[in-house]
Image 1 (cartoon, rainbow, N blue to C red):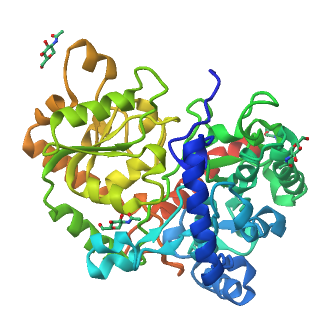
Image 2 (spheres, rainbow, N blue to C red):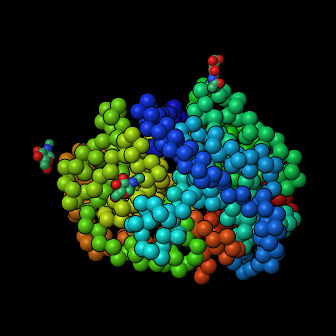
Image 3 (spheres, protein in one colour):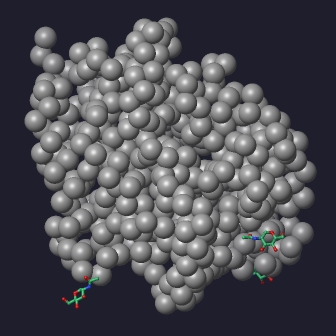
Length: 478
Ligand SMILES: *[C@@H]1O[C@H](CO)[C@@H](O)[C@H](O)[C@H]1NC(C)=O
Ligand SMILES: *[C@@H]1O[C@H](CO)[C@@H](O)[C@H](O)[C@H]1NC(C)=O
Ligand SMILES: *[C@@H]1O[C@H](CO)[C@@H](O)[C@H](O)[C@H]1NC(C)=O
Ligand SMILES: *[C@@H]1O[C@H](CO)[C@@H](O)[C@H](O)[C@H]1NC(C)=O
């Protein structure tokens, strides 16, 4: 594999440049002032409150045999605090650029959108379903949801799959930009976790084949090749070889990585909230043909994002809306991005510094049709969520071959405008229909969204139980 360039399309994921740093320092200062007066602390994870955890266990005992858990039950390990809770407690120190505390509040959902710019965009009754969520908060969000999931069991003897709630992204992330951090620093927590896990009887029984973890950062942050290279080396450690990793960007050549959606800001509590949102985005007028939000890399000659930004400008503001996210202008200001996508029929999703972007999910939640330029950006990533192969990706997305675009002197505008309106309508309906499975519900009851509607976590649990069953022959001889 070519060396991975760790300059992600977002501040939390790339090495800062001086201007960005300055801006972020300013941002951090504001946050600090905000925090001093508001004393925002991360909500304790449900695991730390024994009363709520025993209530959840009670629900689990009652409902665990429910027909919807036909695939089996999931056991959630109670890890030493150093592997999750302690990391939340140091939310101020996890990122050098800004405090993560506001983003890890509310069980990882972040601060509510109420009272922010985003709320002015939303129908009154839906404001409560939106948060300022961090794109790397998956680990905490998933842990909270699984603890109250209807398919959780508190009895490992009854479990068909085992969740290891190690916050690996937070653990590695806090050393990524530390000037003196060594490879050993970035790997210490991961190695300790594996040592702990390998001593558990349930791990030893299956050698890890029915175990899974969640990674809130892209897979390349855990696959350091040499000691000087970027990232930790968790996923290259032999001890993690049989454990399934649910990760926001997977390595297409590693079948133990399973792609799961980036968290967006939409965290509905109930199926009715989702249906109201689906109606809302389905009915919105979309004056613009397409939209693009991204930061061009001026330093890279022929950067594809810069070309798309130029195409957008050439198409004119009536046809294309562009948001130049350079210098961190779109950082956490999801309002600008959501407003843009909610007013467009298509949104362009080129690769960023890695192949995937949270923007794909913002786009679809906004009810716009994603336009992809690299197969690895979605089709080879999220097979549990985004159907692909045998033309199924054409139901909900448009793929434009970058080389043909240039060779045939076509424009993105030309290609998109040539798609017949009835077909566009069908694709949009399909995207809107897919929304529930792409979002992380804020519900804390065992039923999740309820009404038989599955969110991203329900899809994960089903998928992991299926996978554990498929892998059983690898370790079970009887
Ligand atoms: C919020 O909206 C106002 C008015 O549209 C705008 O001037 C301001 O810059 C926005 N703030 C942020 C943080 O986006
Ligand atoms: C990093 O190492 C240098 C040289 O050893 C030292 O002067 C500096 O204080 C260290 N910085 C931090 C943040 O520990
Ligand atoms: C992974 O599974 C194989 C086959 O079951 C086993 O030989 C190996 O020891 C396992 N590795 C770990 C780290 O458990
Ligand atoms: C490409 O198309 C543009 C306008 O559509 C035209 O002006 C230009 O001459 C074309 N270039 C080539 C090489 O065909």
